[in-house]
Image (tube, rainbow, N blue to C red; front, side, top):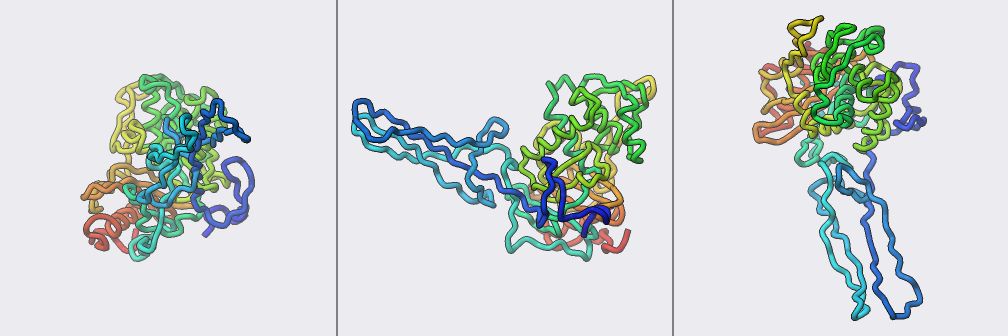
Length: 400
C-alpha cells in the first residue's frame, strides 16, 4: 500500500542524494568490505624484473574504527575470514604469509544489515493492526517478526529521533546543553502553519539546548525541533540541518529510500524511509548516551523562565501508557508519529525479562492507542520465554 498521496509515483522516488530512483524494494544496501593488503618489499641488491607495489584499498571509517569494504555477512554470528599479511624476508627472499585477526569493527549498527531466515515470523494480524512492522533482536541481528518492513512509508514524527541524534552528534561539548536559545517566529511559524504539535515555548522565551532536546521528543514539539535545528547549524535555513540529517543516514548505511526533508516529520513526498530503516535509526540513537537519556524519560520540566515561571511539564505519553502493560519485559524508550498519509506510527526499544534487547517499529495503525497495543502484542508474541502468548489486556486489531 502506498502511503503517499495518490498523485505520487511510488516507482520514482527521490533518494537521499536528491536523485530520482526506480523503486522495486527497499532492501538494505550491503556495506562492502575490502580487506587491506600490503606487500612490503625489502629486496635490496636482489635484481627483480618487476617492482613490488603497495596496493591500498580505501576503507570506511566509523567512529574511530575502520570497517573494510568486502561483502558483509548477513549475520553477526558468521565468523569473518582472516586476512593475510604479506611480506618478503630480506634474508631468504621468501614471501612470508602470516594470518592476522580481522580489524575490530565499530558499533553494532554501522555497516550492519539485520537478517531474516526461515524462523522470521510474519506479524500476526489477529492482534496487530499496523500495516507495517518490524521487530529486531539487537543482540543477534535477527528479524523476529515483520510485515512489509521494506516498504517505503512516511515516518511522520519518528523523524525526530534522527533530528535529536543529528543534533547530538554536532554538540561541541556537554556544556553546550546549557547554551541559551531564544525562541523566534522563524522557529514557530513552520510548525504552526503545518498544524504540528509543540512543546509550548513562547516567542521571545529563552530556554536551554537541553530543553530543546526534551521538547523535541517528549511532546513531539515542532517548535523545539526547529529551534534545535537552527541552533545546530547556526543558520535559519532548514536545508542546512536537513543536509546533516541525510549525511547521518548515509553514515548509518540505510536503504536508498531513506531520505529526509525536514526535522519535524511533516509530510513531504521526499521525506520517507522503511520501518527497518527507522529501527536502525532508533538503535543508533540509543547508543548515544545523552539521546538515550532523552528517549527514555517519561516526564521532564523545562527551565523556569519569565514566560513560564514554573517551567513547562512535558511527558512521553507512549512510555507512560505502556509502562503498566505486560510486554514480557520493559519498554525503555519510544517515539510516536502521526500524519494522515501513514496514520499512527511508533518506534520503541524494549528489553525482555531475560535481558535481550529489541527494537520495534510500526506504521499505519488506525489510532494512537492501537499503535501502543500493537507494540504490546508484538513484544508478547515474539520475545521472552513465553513467546506466542498474548496478554489478555491486548484487544483484537479491530478494536481501539
